[in-house]
Image (cartoon, helix red, strand yellow):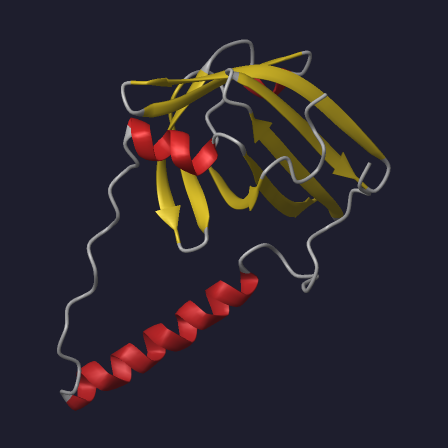
Length: 163
């Protein structure tokens, strides 16, 4: 089995480098607009993925996120098989939780329910998913677990989550 570890190359919060880049880009844009050199409008927001795009972007891949809560670094990874099964693990400095669940695509929404853990708050949760550069943004639209997510997509079962 592969050893669980945080992603290489950064100790800061997920996306911190992108945030700094956006701030610099925004300031540069303000300078260009003030000088009259800016010519093109900002791009429109990306539309949610279709059912076919959802299947291609998520099924057979691992969704990964990391962050810090109460001063403790945490990690979460979920792998989604083509047969509708989902496998996940959350880990931090002193422990971990593993879970199994189910996923489905319903009316263009990614829906999932987790067993054995309270991640689903007792029900099915559905999300509208959009691409965000190299990752995916999941916006909660239905169910008891009202939380949005921003995931890095990794190919295959990157953390050996499925049995």
